[in-house]
Length: 112
Image 1 (cartoon, rainbow, N blue to C red):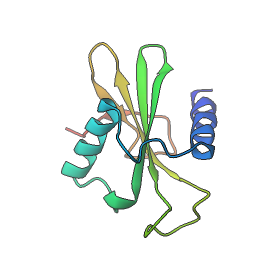
Image 2 (image 1 turned 180 degrees about the horizontal axis):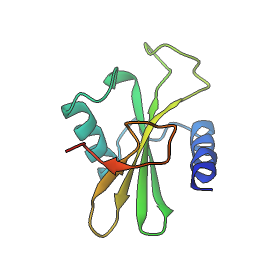
Image 3 (image 1 turned 90 degrees about the horizontal axis):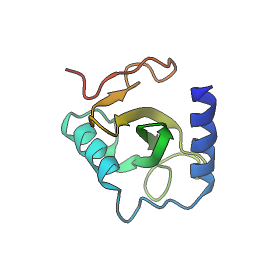
Image 4 (image 1 turned 90 degrees about the vertical axis):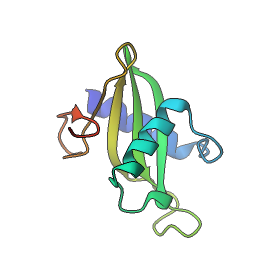
């Protein structure tokens, strides 16, 4: 069920204007900084971050996707998901499915 909701939200985000080109929300910026600092991305300049506040009760999510525009290759009508980072609103702990985005198992982000 959670996966279906995430896919639906991602689809809506893809159809909308890319609102994060100008400035990312602080939570998404933090995920971006961690991903880039730890070299978790193949192509940081061709990566985008979709912020989903309250994706579940008490949880914010940042969906990390490929960006296909400008000098970034790929179909501009798509933004394939790379991984998702969930952020606990109270503890600010981050978990991610970066190790296997096809499975709903989340572990510490960044990996310890």
